[in-house]
Image 1 (cartoon, rainbow, N blue to C red):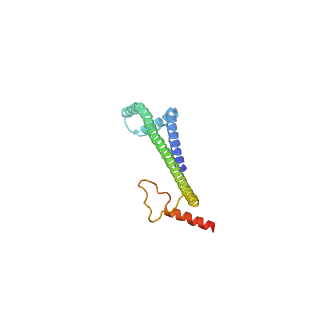
Image 2: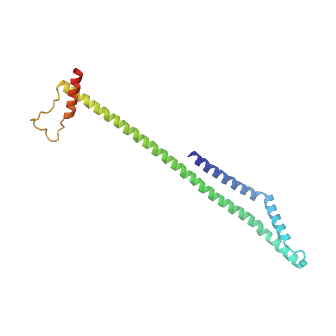
Image 3: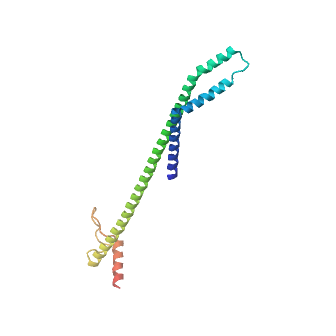
Amino acid sequence: MKTFTNDIEKTINAIKKQIQEENSKILTPSFHSSRLQEALQTSVGGISKDADPKEVIQQLLNIINQVPSFAGATISEALTRISTRRTELQVWVNVRAQYENYLAEREEEQRQAAQIAAEQAQQAIDQELSLAARAERVLDDVANGKVKEREVGERPRDLGTHPGPTVRELRAAKAKLKQSSS
């Protein structure tokens, strides 16, 4: 997980560096002069030496007239590259934000799952304790004679009333008392 975050950060930093480099190129006169020099040398090198002097002058004038647009195109191209890099940077910043949200959501889900598991474990412990307490209470009631097992001919309990301990609980308590007295 951290490796992916590191990769995103490296990409973001590389794009920021590229933007800075493009900005510095635009502001550096030597960059513009070297590009212009290369273009002029290529253009002048393309003029035929055997051509008519008037034709040579016309070609040189055409080259000179294209210099401002060439210089402007250099700046425009650099600004376009910067704009493209900024768009790419924004995409990666969004990727980082989405990934951080994803990690936060997963962490929250894991925290909630752990909390639910802890609550379920506590409920199981509480249930075991309540069952143990109920068994202990039934044992005390049987030992003190407060509760006895219903007889076969006894009238059934009234509807809606709790019957108290089950026959199984009563018999288990009796067996435990009998075992402890032996």
